[in-house]
Structure formats: structure tokens, C-alpha cells
Image (cartoon, rainbow, N blue to C red; front, side):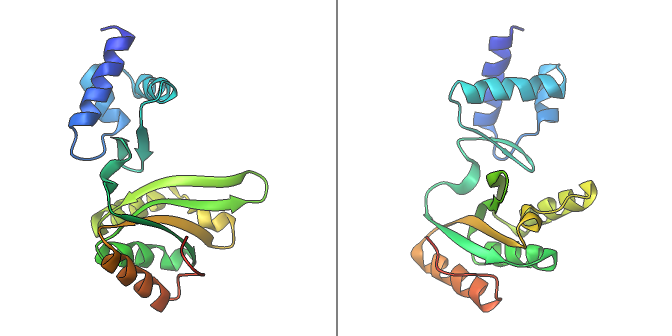
Length: 174
């Protein structure tokens, strides 16, 4: 199989997937190493394909967020509040697309979360624990931004009220 054909296969696999697809799963499907897939995805992105890397794998076009109402919220909590914050958003019927921090040396750093359920939150939490990793907010005194997506204005209002009640919100959403 040529490299061009392999990249087409990656795009087709992502387009037909109902959720994230790991580099390892793509590699097994294509009979190549995980690193070859990572390189192919980099080349596809450079060519303009909208492929997002999430903690659970690659998604085409940004994942499950679909339409809905988006907002950016500024939050502050320690590691002890991380899972509860994600559960709160999911329990309100909304999703957390990403996390962004403002680092004094590197500037803006972002990570894709794509958390839409308690299950997604648990997968993210387990990955942090398994890898001994710290969340990005640990770099900035626990201050961070999230892009939230909600199906409608009513759920947006509910999630903002819930996060405020728990003391996680720092101020007005954008």
C-alpha cells in the first residue's frame, strides 16, 4: 500500500468511526507501526485535514461537539476538584472540548479533552493517574480555561450556575 493510499484509509477510518480511534488501532488495521500513523496524521493535518487528537484517539472534524452553544469559562480548582468539575459539566448535559492555560514562558497551551460523559471524564482521569501526569492547570496555580459546548441556552445556564455554586468559576464567560 502506498503512503498516499494509507493516508486515505486513515481519513476513511476516522470518517466512519463513531468515536475516537487510537493510533494503535489504526496501525493494526493498516499493518504499520503506531509511529507511521502518527507521522501520517501530521502530514494530513499539514494538508488541511481537521483531525483532532484526544486522550482516547483521533477524531475527524473536532469530535462529538457538533452544533450547540459554545462558551469559554475561566476556572480555578486543584487536582481534588478536577473530576468533579468534569462530572458537573457532563451531568448538566454539556461537554468540555479543551483546556487552556496561559504559561509565563510558552504563552497559551491547550489540550483537547473531548469530555461529554462521566465515562469520558473517568478515562481522562485514569490516563492522568496511569501516566503520573499533572493537569495543565498545575502549571498556572490551578487557573485554566475550558471551551464548553451545550445543546441549548438552558443547559448552558444550568452548567454555569452549577460550576459557580461549586466555586469553580472565576468570572464571566466569553
